[in-house]
Length: 360
Image (tube, rainbow, N blue to C red; front, side, top):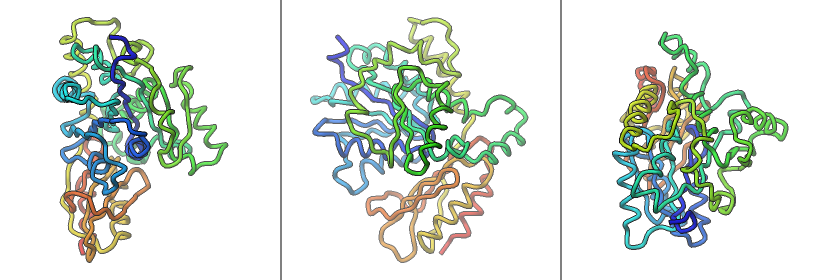
Protein backbone atom coordinates (compact mmCIF):
# COMPACT_ATOMS: atom_id res chain seq x y z
CA UNK A 1 0.00 0.00 0.00
CA UNK A 2 1.39 3.42 -0.93
CA UNK A 3 1.71 6.26 1.55
CA UNK A 4 -1.05 8.13 -0.25
CA UNK A 5 -3.53 5.29 0.40
CA UNK A 6 -2.68 4.92 4.11
CA UNK A 7 -4.52 6.70 6.93
CA UNK A 8 -2.35 9.63 8.09
CA UNK A 9 -1.49 9.97 11.78
CA UNK A 10 -0.14 13.08 13.47
CA UNK A 11 1.83 12.83 16.71
CA UNK A 12 1.67 15.88 18.97
CA UNK A 13 4.44 15.98 21.54
CA UNK A 14 5.97 18.61 23.78
CA UNK A 15 6.71 19.24 27.39
CA UNK A 16 4.17 19.64 30.18
CA UNK A 17 2.12 22.80 29.88
CA UNK A 18 3.34 23.78 26.41
CA UNK A 19 -0.21 23.82 25.05
CA UNK A 20 -0.65 20.49 23.25
CA UNK A 21 -4.26 20.02 24.34
CA UNK A 22 -5.24 23.55 23.34
CA UNK A 23 -3.66 23.08 19.92
CA UNK A 24 -5.54 19.80 19.39
CA UNK A 25 -8.82 21.28 20.61
CA UNK A 26 -8.45 24.08 18.05
CA UNK A 27 -7.55 21.55 15.37
CA UNK A 28 -10.67 19.46 16.04
CA UNK A 29 -12.90 22.54 16.18
CA UNK A 30 -11.70 23.53 12.69
CA UNK A 31 -11.38 20.03 11.20
CA UNK A 32 -13.55 20.91 8.21
CA UNK A 33 -15.57 17.70 8.24
CA UNK A 34 -12.63 15.33 8.65
CA UNK A 35 -13.34 12.31 10.85
CA UNK A 36 -10.53 12.60 13.39
CA UNK A 37 -9.81 9.83 15.88
CA UNK A 38 -7.91 11.08 18.89
CA UNK A 39 -5.66 9.02 21.14
CA UNK A 40 -4.74 10.81 24.37
CA UNK A 41 -1.97 9.50 26.59
CA UNK A 42 -1.65 10.54 30.22
CA UNK A 43 1.10 10.03 32.79
CA UNK A 44 -0.55 8.86 35.98
CA UNK A 45 -3.64 6.94 37.03
CA UNK A 46 -6.30 9.56 36.34
CA UNK A 47 -6.90 10.86 32.84
CA UNK A 48 -7.41 14.56 32.28
CA UNK A 49 -6.71 15.87 28.81
CA UNK A 50 -9.06 13.38 27.16
CA UNK A 51 -11.87 14.65 29.34
CA UNK A 52 -10.91 18.22 28.52
CA UNK A 53 -11.14 17.49 24.80
CA UNK A 54 -14.11 15.13 24.70
CA UNK A 55 -16.18 16.46 27.60
CA UNK A 56 -15.50 20.16 27.65
CA UNK A 57 -19.20 21.01 27.11
CA UNK A 58 -18.33 22.48 23.71
CA UNK A 59 -19.78 20.40 20.84
CA UNK A 60 -17.17 21.82 18.46
CA UNK A 61 -14.46 20.14 20.52
CA UNK A 62 -15.89 16.63 20.28
CA UNK A 63 -13.62 14.24 18.39
CA UNK A 64 -14.99 11.36 16.32
CA UNK A 65 -13.57 9.07 18.97
CA UNK A 66 -11.29 9.63 21.93
CA UNK A 67 -9.26 6.74 23.30
CA UNK A 68 -7.42 7.52 26.51
CA UNK A 69 -4.39 5.54 27.68
CA UNK A 70 -3.67 6.08 31.35
CA UNK A 71 -1.12 3.49 32.34
CA UNK A 72 2.05 5.40 31.58
CA UNK A 73 3.91 7.09 28.76
CA UNK A 74 3.15 5.79 25.28
CA UNK A 75 6.90 5.31 24.83
CA UNK A 76 6.78 2.66 27.55
CA UNK A 77 3.63 0.83 26.47
CA UNK A 78 3.59 0.81 22.65
CA UNK A 79 3.17 -2.96 22.35
CA UNK A 80 0.96 -3.53 25.39
CA UNK A 81 -1.52 -0.71 24.94
CA UNK A 82 -1.03 1.58 21.96
CA UNK A 83 -0.76 -0.97 19.15
CA UNK A 84 -3.95 -2.87 20.08
CA UNK A 85 -5.74 0.46 20.32
CA UNK A 86 -4.56 1.41 16.83
CA UNK A 87 -5.68 -1.92 15.40
CA UNK A 88 -9.16 -1.50 16.91
CA UNK A 89 -9.46 1.96 15.35
CA UNK A 90 -8.38 0.65 11.96
CA UNK A 91 -10.81 -2.28 12.10
CA UNK A 92 -13.86 -0.06 12.60
CA UNK A 93 -16.58 -0.20 9.95
CA UNK A 94 -15.84 3.45 9.19
CA UNK A 95 -12.13 4.12 9.74
CA UNK A 96 -11.09 7.67 10.62
CA UNK A 97 -9.80 10.09 8.00
CA UNK A 98 -6.95 11.11 10.27
CA UNK A 99 -5.56 9.96 13.62
CA UNK A 100 -4.15 12.46 16.11
CA UNK A 101 -2.08 11.19 19.02
CA UNK A 102 -1.36 13.46 21.96
CA UNK A 103 1.56 12.04 23.93
CA UNK A 104 2.21 12.67 27.58
CA UNK A 105 4.60 15.55 28.18
CA UNK A 106 6.99 12.96 29.61
CA UNK A 107 6.98 10.69 26.56
CA UNK A 108 9.77 10.09 24.09
CA UNK A 109 8.39 10.41 20.54
CA UNK A 110 10.88 8.11 18.76
CA UNK A 111 9.62 4.76 20.13
CA UNK A 112 6.09 5.75 19.19
CA UNK A 113 7.14 6.58 15.62
CA UNK A 114 8.99 3.26 15.49
CA UNK A 115 5.77 1.45 16.44
CA UNK A 116 4.28 2.47 13.10
CA UNK A 117 6.69 0.04 11.41
CA UNK A 118 5.10 -2.93 13.16
CA UNK A 119 3.13 -5.47 11.05
CA UNK A 120 -0.57 -4.74 11.06
CA UNK A 121 0.04 -1.00 11.31
CA UNK A 122 2.71 -0.16 8.72
CA UNK A 123 0.58 -1.27 5.77
CA UNK A 124 -2.40 0.79 6.90
CA UNK A 125 -1.14 3.97 8.62
CA UNK A 126 1.65 6.46 8.05
CA UNK A 127 3.02 9.14 10.37
CA UNK A 128 1.96 12.30 8.55
CA UNK A 129 4.08 14.40 10.90
CA UNK A 130 5.44 14.87 14.39
CA UNK A 131 4.48 18.22 15.88
CA UNK A 132 6.51 19.43 18.85
CA UNK A 133 4.85 22.19 20.87
CA UNK A 134 7.11 24.47 22.94
CA UNK A 135 6.36 27.10 25.57
CA UNK A 136 7.92 30.15 23.95
CA UNK A 137 7.35 32.29 27.05
CA UNK A 138 9.23 29.87 29.28
CA UNK A 139 12.08 29.50 26.79
CA UNK A 140 12.38 33.27 26.51
CA UNK A 141 12.95 33.32 30.27
CA UNK A 142 15.73 30.76 29.97
CA UNK A 143 13.63 27.81 31.16
CA UNK A 144 12.30 24.80 29.31
CA UNK A 145 9.08 24.54 31.26
CA UNK A 146 9.96 24.00 34.85
CA UNK A 147 11.37 25.72 37.91
CA UNK A 148 15.15 25.37 37.73
CA UNK A 149 15.36 25.66 41.51
CA UNK A 150 13.27 22.49 41.77
CA UNK A 151 15.66 20.71 39.45
CA UNK A 152 18.65 21.90 41.49
CA UNK A 153 16.99 20.62 44.65
CA UNK A 154 16.40 17.24 43.00
CA UNK A 155 20.04 17.01 41.92
CA UNK A 156 21.17 17.88 45.43
CA UNK A 157 18.96 15.15 46.88
CA UNK A 158 20.09 12.44 44.44
CA UNK A 159 23.80 11.98 43.79
CA UNK A 160 22.98 9.79 40.78
CA UNK A 161 21.70 12.81 38.86
CA UNK A 162 25.08 14.07 37.74
CA UNK A 163 24.06 13.62 34.07
CA UNK A 164 21.88 15.88 31.96
CA UNK A 165 18.52 16.28 33.59
CA UNK A 166 15.77 14.01 32.25
CA UNK A 167 13.75 17.09 31.37
CA UNK A 168 16.56 18.49 29.21
CA UNK A 169 17.00 15.14 27.48
CA UNK A 170 13.28 14.98 26.72
CA UNK A 171 13.37 18.51 25.35
CA UNK A 172 16.18 17.71 22.91
CA UNK A 173 14.63 14.39 21.89
CA UNK A 174 11.25 15.95 21.16
CA UNK A 175 12.91 18.57 18.97
CA UNK A 176 15.07 16.01 17.16
CA UNK A 177 11.98 14.05 16.10
CA UNK A 178 9.89 17.02 14.97
CA UNK A 179 8.56 17.72 11.48
CA UNK A 180 6.97 20.94 12.73
CA UNK A 181 7.92 22.97 15.80
CA UNK A 182 5.25 25.23 17.27
CA UNK A 183 6.44 28.12 19.43
CA UNK A 184 3.24 28.47 21.42
CA UNK A 185 2.35 31.45 23.64
CA UNK A 186 4.23 33.70 21.22
CA UNK A 187 1.88 36.53 22.17
CA UNK A 188 3.53 36.59 25.61
CA UNK A 189 6.99 37.45 24.26
CA UNK A 190 8.39 40.18 22.02
CA UNK A 191 9.79 39.67 18.53
CA UNK A 192 13.38 39.93 19.71
CA UNK A 193 12.87 37.33 22.42
CA UNK A 194 11.12 35.04 19.96
CA UNK A 195 14.12 35.22 17.63
CA UNK A 196 16.39 34.30 20.53
CA UNK A 197 14.21 31.26 21.16
CA UNK A 198 14.49 30.27 17.50
CA UNK A 199 18.25 30.56 17.68
CA UNK A 200 18.33 28.54 20.90
CA UNK A 201 16.54 25.54 19.41
CA UNK A 202 18.17 25.70 15.96
CA UNK A 203 20.86 23.17 16.82
CA UNK A 204 18.28 20.50 17.71
CA UNK A 205 15.98 21.00 14.74
CA UNK A 206 16.65 19.33 11.39
CA UNK A 207 17.25 21.81 8.52
CA UNK A 208 14.01 20.95 6.69
CA UNK A 209 11.78 21.43 9.74
CA UNK A 210 9.50 24.45 9.89
CA UNK A 211 9.36 26.50 13.10
CA UNK A 212 6.15 28.50 13.45
CA UNK A 213 4.78 30.80 16.13
CA UNK A 214 1.29 30.38 17.58
CA UNK A 215 -0.95 32.20 20.02
CA UNK A 216 -3.15 30.12 22.32
CA UNK A 217 -2.44 26.98 20.30
CA UNK A 218 -4.11 28.20 17.12
CA UNK A 219 -2.72 27.34 13.70
CA UNK A 220 -4.54 26.65 10.43
CA UNK A 221 -5.43 22.97 10.06
CA UNK A 222 -3.58 22.82 6.75
CA UNK A 223 -0.37 23.78 8.55
CA UNK A 224 -0.80 20.94 11.04
CA UNK A 225 -2.16 18.16 8.83
CA UNK A 226 -1.19 16.87 5.41
CA UNK A 227 2.56 17.17 5.87
CA UNK A 228 3.26 13.75 4.32
CA UNK A 229 6.42 13.16 6.36
CA UNK A 230 6.23 9.33 6.50
CA UNK A 231 8.28 9.67 9.68
CA UNK A 232 8.35 5.91 10.28
CA UNK A 233 10.64 5.59 7.21
CA UNK A 234 12.97 8.37 8.38
CA UNK A 235 13.98 7.35 11.90
CA UNK A 236 17.71 7.47 11.19
CA UNK A 237 17.49 11.23 10.76
CA UNK A 238 15.58 11.67 14.02
CA UNK A 239 18.44 10.99 16.40
CA UNK A 240 17.42 10.75 20.04
CA UNK A 241 19.57 10.93 23.14
CA UNK A 242 17.76 7.88 24.53
CA UNK A 243 18.02 5.72 21.39
CA UNK A 244 20.97 3.34 21.47
CA UNK A 245 20.42 1.13 18.40
CA UNK A 246 23.26 1.48 15.88
CA UNK A 247 21.54 -0.47 13.11
CA UNK A 248 18.08 -1.34 11.89
CA UNK A 249 16.68 -4.47 13.45
CA UNK A 250 14.06 -6.45 11.54
CA UNK A 251 13.30 -8.51 14.63
CA UNK A 252 10.49 -6.43 16.06
CA UNK A 253 10.24 -8.47 19.24
CA UNK A 254 13.90 -7.87 20.09
CA UNK A 255 13.60 -4.20 19.15
CA UNK A 256 10.62 -3.78 21.42
CA UNK A 257 12.35 -5.52 24.30
CA UNK A 258 15.32 -3.16 24.08
CA UNK A 259 13.17 -0.06 23.83
CA UNK A 260 10.81 -1.29 26.53
CA UNK A 261 13.64 -1.82 29.02
CA UNK A 262 15.36 1.44 28.17
CA UNK A 263 12.27 3.60 28.14
CA UNK A 264 11.16 2.28 31.51
CA UNK A 265 14.49 3.54 32.83
CA UNK A 266 13.54 6.96 31.44
CA UNK A 267 10.06 6.58 32.93
CA UNK A 268 11.58 5.98 36.36
CA UNK A 269 12.94 9.55 36.39
CA UNK A 270 9.39 10.76 37.08
CA UNK A 271 6.51 9.96 39.38
CA UNK A 272 2.87 10.94 39.73
CA UNK A 273 0.16 10.55 42.33
CA UNK A 274 -3.41 11.65 42.95
CA UNK A 275 -4.47 13.77 45.90
CA UNK A 276 -8.02 14.11 47.21
CA UNK A 277 -8.58 17.76 48.14
CA UNK A 278 -11.35 19.52 50.00
CA UNK A 279 -13.35 22.29 48.35
CA UNK A 280 -11.64 25.64 47.90
CA UNK A 281 -13.01 28.91 49.24
CA UNK A 282 -12.84 30.57 45.82
CA UNK A 283 -11.24 30.26 42.41
CA UNK A 284 -8.50 32.66 43.51
CA UNK A 285 -7.91 30.57 46.61
CA UNK A 286 -7.48 27.47 44.42
CA UNK A 287 -5.01 29.28 42.18
CA UNK A 288 -2.99 30.57 45.15
CA UNK A 289 -2.77 27.22 46.92
CA UNK A 290 -1.94 25.28 43.78
CA UNK A 291 0.73 27.86 43.00
CA UNK A 292 2.23 27.28 46.46
CA UNK A 293 2.10 23.52 45.92
CA UNK A 294 3.79 23.55 42.53
CA UNK A 295 6.62 25.61 44.00
CA UNK A 296 7.64 22.63 46.15
CA UNK A 297 10.91 20.92 45.07
CA UNK A 298 10.59 18.50 42.17
CA UNK A 299 6.99 19.31 41.20
CA UNK A 300 6.51 19.84 37.46
CA UNK A 301 2.76 19.98 36.99
CA UNK A 302 -0.54 19.84 38.90
CA UNK A 303 -3.86 19.40 37.17
CA UNK A 304 -7.38 18.16 37.75
CA UNK A 305 -10.90 19.17 38.75
CA UNK A 306 -11.72 20.73 42.12
CA UNK A 307 -14.81 21.90 43.99
CA UNK A 308 -15.32 25.54 44.96
CA UNK A 309 -17.54 26.39 47.91
CA UNK A 310 -20.97 27.66 46.89
CA UNK A 311 -20.45 26.93 43.19
CA UNK A 312 -22.46 24.21 41.43
CA UNK A 313 -19.88 23.72 38.68
CA UNK A 314 -16.44 22.30 39.47
CA UNK A 315 -13.30 24.09 38.37
CA UNK A 316 -10.52 22.78 36.16
CA UNK A 317 -6.99 23.57 37.34
CA UNK A 318 -3.76 23.39 35.38
CA UNK A 319 -0.40 24.49 36.77
CA UNK A 320 3.06 24.29 35.29
CA UNK A 321 6.13 26.24 36.42
CA UNK A 322 5.06 29.59 37.84
CA UNK A 323 1.72 29.70 35.99
CA UNK A 324 -1.66 28.48 37.21
CA UNK A 325 -4.89 28.50 35.22
CA UNK A 326 -8.32 27.79 36.73
CA UNK A 327 -11.77 28.01 35.19
CA UNK A 328 -15.26 26.69 35.86
CA UNK A 329 -16.33 23.80 33.63
CA UNK A 330 -19.76 22.20 33.94
CA UNK A 331 -18.52 19.04 32.22
CA UNK A 332 -15.53 18.46 34.50
CA UNK A 333 -15.40 14.97 35.97
CA UNK A 334 -14.30 13.77 39.45
CA UNK A 335 -14.01 17.14 41.23
CA UNK A 336 -11.86 17.05 44.31
CA UNK A 337 -8.91 15.18 42.82
CA UNK A 338 -5.61 16.59 41.58
CA UNK A 339 -2.85 14.79 39.70
CA UNK A 340 0.67 15.81 40.73
CA UNK A 341 3.49 15.05 38.27
CA UNK A 342 7.15 15.58 38.97
CA UNK A 343 10.66 14.27 39.33
CA UNK A 344 11.12 11.12 41.35
CA UNK A 345 11.42 11.90 45.06
CA UNK A 346 9.44 15.15 44.85
CA UNK A 347 8.27 16.81 48.06
CA UNK A 348 4.86 15.11 48.39
CA UNK A 349 4.39 16.18 52.03
CA UNK A 350 4.99 19.80 51.08
CA UNK A 351 2.44 19.55 48.25
CA UNK A 352 -0.16 18.05 50.56
CA UNK A 353 0.48 20.71 53.18
CA UNK A 354 0.12 23.56 50.69
CA UNK A 355 -3.16 22.20 49.36
CA UNK A 356 -4.67 21.20 52.71
CA UNK A 357 -4.71 24.80 53.91
CA UNK A 358 -7.28 25.57 51.22
CA UNK A 359 -10.15 23.68 52.81
CA UNK A 360 -13.32 25.74 53.02
